[in-house]
Length: 130
Ligand code: HEC
Image 1 (cartoon, protein in one colour):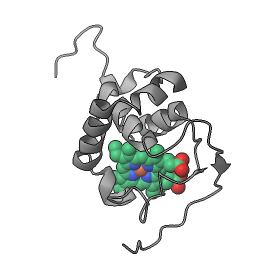
Image 2 (cartoon, protein in one colour; image 1 turned 90 degrees about the horizontal axis):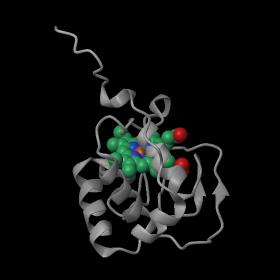
Image 3 (cartoon, rainbow, N blue to C red; image 1 turned 90 degrees about the vertical axis):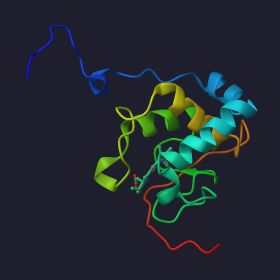
Image 4 (cartoon, rainbow, N blue to C red; image 1 turned 180 degrees about the vertical axis):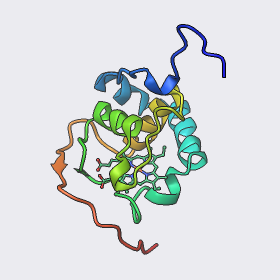
């Protein structure tokens, strides 16, 4: 395979997380939120986190308990990096940062700015009841 000088694979590029202010604002933008909802389904987030985001094979994303930080900027970062050792895929190489922003906007459209954030130490998968 030819090696192109200066070519860097996208996965090697660090992705700067947007600010909390920018992501909260996006969470109130209905176009961004509905684009995020679509991406959430198409990217299979829904398979693990559930159609209502209330979890099952993966944690609930609409409660106030977070394993890896509950500010929008931290959640953006968790999605980019994933938690491969715990079954959460690394999405940075697969999704455009704009799409990740929309997904974060969709998640935070279920939250309220300034709500308390509780630290959750570990996650145990459960069978959701709808
Ligand atoms: C194969 C199953 C699976 C898929 C698909 C998946 N996740 Fe996850 N996700 C997990 C698991 C398991 C965890 C918990 C990791 C841990 O225990 O640290 C997690 C954790 C998270 C967290 C951190 C939650 C917290 O409390 O800090 C966020 C945010 C998240 N996922 C978003 C997403 C998004 C957005 C997508 C789609 C782009 C996605 N996930 C797709 C399994 C999945």
